[in-house]
Image: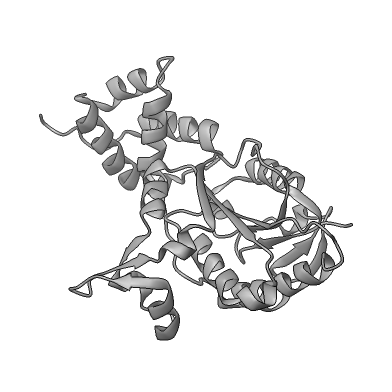
Length: 277
């Protein structure tokens, strides 16, 4: 099969609008070559010869499975363990102790619920799980429940496997690396240990839609809304705030462009906002 040429601007606009409608992500024109290459993979996977035929097929009713695969192909997943260390320092040294103190006098102490939104291949929720496990004594029996969600089924598959290349763990402290990973015999891969995987549930979710779950004590949303336009950001922020318990915290990345949308919350740090009690 001869591979089709680069998307025309008209074709690109069709696919870009489709991506926006289904994910809220606005793809810039500068990404036309990247999008072309990734759509070619879907053509090959479905035995189709050109972009127009694929678009017609993709937009036929009942193509939900292929839509998910298409969004997998064209969305970017970039993350790392303990990205922006001060966020995890706050989680470990301030947030967890506060949760324990706040519920110390309750006869029934619910689990501390944490949501890693747009978790990609799992490094963020696993970093949170490491922080929680390292605070086992301080938690005094309190359970920590972590939900990791993403729109990409492929990314979630990797996250559930919890196996990473050596390069992915280079910045993890050696002692923490030894505690939290099992190293392959050749030293090429590192697998998350079972006691950390047990703390996390991974689930498919589109940030533009409500999450069917009990409210969370803390939500991490970082380095993803930079790909959304203002209208989509506003929608996501409203849904995130709805998913916080009163007194819960929202941790945001430095480049999300949503600071003026967080008026319902109280600013605690440059990256940290709290829902009023």
